[in-house]
Length: 129
Image (cartoon, rainbow, N blue to C red; front, top):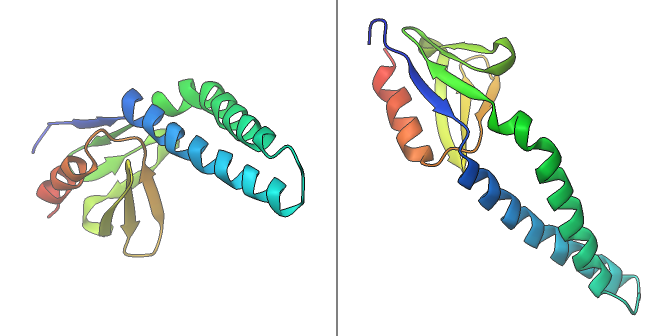
């Protein structure tokens, strides 16, 4: 792989899909809490859950979608100066649209919002020594 850089950018569709699922969970949880508290207006939980996740998604989109991980010659290089030597990767696992990278010393990193997490894992596995 000498000199080649493989990029793993965040995918907008995966980001939106993750937030849709999160909103559905937040809506159901908020309605359940209001029901357990005896509130006669449990529907407001759905509105609040949807609004909270929609606001979060809108607010965080530019930051989250600009994050790119790169597979370089001997390391996986991520945002904010994260660098994971390929020889120190112990485990790669898919978690929804995320790829979790666990190092031999226990550090964990997330490659977020991947359109095809299995393909991301396969590319990293192929590059490992």
